[in-house]
Image (cartoon, rainbow, N blue to C red):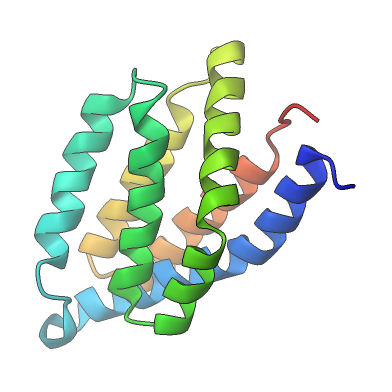
Amino acid sequence: HESRHDSFTTLMDLRGPLEVRAAHRAAERFADGAAEPSGGRESLERLREELSAALPDSSLYPRLDLRLHQEIALLSGNRALQGLLEAVRVPLFRAMQDVRAARDLHGMVGSEHVDHLQIIDAILAGDPAASSAAMDHHMRTVEAFEIAP
């Protein structure tokens, strides 16, 4: 039976490329003002504020983290991406909680928040290349995290 570490790696293998693609597509839609998702800007800006306020809260932050990634999938306009991320929502949330616990343990809370802000800002700026790069960096950083086996 798979250890938590193995299932985390499996999850990241699936999730990484999807998240990068979702961020890219979301930014493209913001770049093309006409296609900007209705309410998307307000929603992302509100999430940005909520994440900043919740950073010290180890229980709330992972919930907002999950919401951010769901929102980006929604803003991508790609239903298949939304469906795939929704399908792994439970293990994904557990992984986010595990990574946060590891960050708390090692005094590393904050770097993930810098990533989130860069991703949000690049999407809002309608910059697909910067959005993809920021999300790719975020996925690699998260994947490099050692979580309890």
